[in-house]
Length: 243
Ligand SMILES: NC(=O)c1ccc[n+]([C@@H]2O[C@H](COP(=O)([O-])OP(=O)(O)OC[C@H]3O[C@@H](n4cnc5c(N)ncnc54)[C@H](OP(=O)(O)O)[C@@H]3O)[C@@H](O)[C@H]2O)c1
Image (cartoon, rainbow, N blue to C red; front, side, top):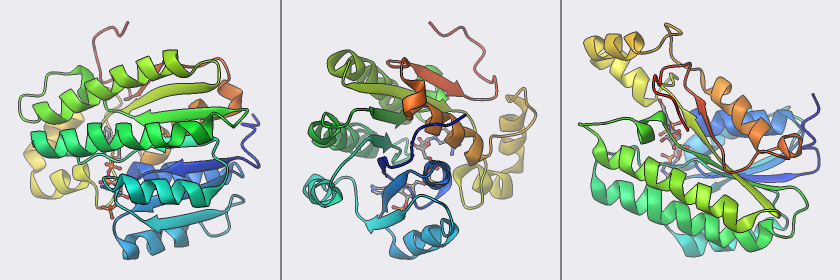
């Protein structure tokens, strides 16, 4: 299927590693130009290396999404914008970190990008949530609450911006990649990792590319009638019915 992303411009927050990097690669593989950010220059350069040879042009920027002025300057330099992927999370159970990064900074980035997206004829905002947003999380309540709040904001944003901008959430399940959270758990806390594996009916965790393909589709013009959705890419691990 042609995703009709050729000639489009995407911006991915937190694209130098993990799920964000896989999203950058998936979009660039569809000939979409992609700009991504991260805070560490070495990780940005390593990520750019992995994108060499992909048909879409990829650029990386050293930028902390909590610096909304810097984010605004980046947007100004970018020219057009068709696809915004909000991927950064503090991945923290600390309330201050979860609220300032996952909620305040992410909302500020979305609001800053909206005027530019309104000029696109195929605009999409895709937020990377988590299945944690709909599960009780006694040891990381702040993270789950932030994800739930953002899924709510995205639903409201969809209602506010349609028909000009489609807005969706993609909620990954447990995702495994070198250097990631679950990789650390696998190495350092094998008994916890065994429990994580147990709650996954696929008997394995997701590869970031499996999440990224969902994000690329939901962000592309081919998904033209999808908005206000929260798509779970969780391998069936969330057992309750989602309404
Ligand atoms: N991994 C999972 O199992 C899982 C499951 C469900 C949902 N998710 C969600 O998927 C998203 C990505 O998770 P991940 O596991 O791929 O995360 P990750 O491995 O920590 O990668 C996060 C990316 O964001 C960048 N980043 C972090 N904080 C930033 C900031 N303040 N400003 C700019 N860039 C920043 C990181 O680079 P620097 O550190 O160099 O800045 C990196 O490129 C998150 O929203 C997370 O909640 C993940």
